[in-house]
Length: 213
Ligand code: 5GP
Ligand code: MG
Image 1 (tube, rainbow, N blue to C red):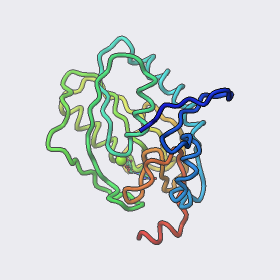
Image 2 (image 1 turned 90 degrees about the vertical axis):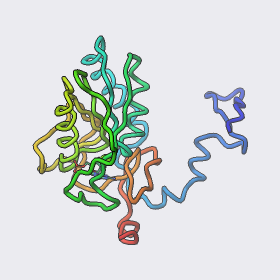
Image 3 (image 1 turned 135 degrees about the horizontal axis):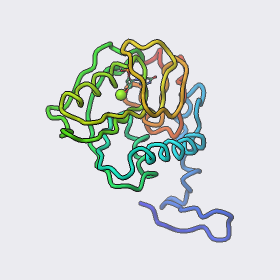
Image 4 (image 1 turned 120 degrees about the vertical axis):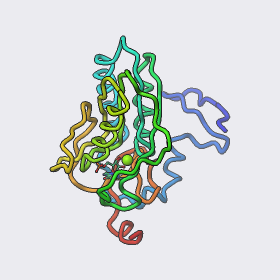
């Protein structure tokens, strides 16, 4: 629980938690996750700046129309939460659960829909959000499914797009960053369920991945 104590006199207001640590100091104390990271590819500050630009672009296209945002869980959770808070227009949020990596560092090649029911999209404009575009199978399969269910428009947005040849010929309408073809974690992206809560996008140390294989 935040005690809400405000540091007086400093150049910035810092809210302290009940242990007396600021958020920044606390992040340094939570070092074990950071120790597994070989390099930071995109830091928090750069992500924040890029989100402002992305949100403005999406707003230009979507403002004035009713639309539903569909979040592909769990990877797009962190990105979506930060992006949508920059979009002060009426919108609905729905989630769908699909899996293709199954805890590994390579795509299984198959997209599984894990929900028994999909959101109602008939006649609606949809903004589909995923964390990363890799082989393209996920965006392709989900986009296709939503169109089958009668969505009028399906636009897609990803935080990251890997520059590579795709198995499915699909590109996202909005892209945060282009990255190389390597396995990344953080800011929503996981390795074996972990690292989603890192505030940046990075690459794990080889020994961490080897230990998990
Ligand atoms: P695609 O279907 O385009 O091959 O892959 C999309 C999904 O695979 C993403 O939603 C994400 O869950 C997972 N994925 C692809 N590349 C990476 C990566 O580099 N790191 C992580 N953690 N997940 C990835
Ligand atoms: Mg995913």
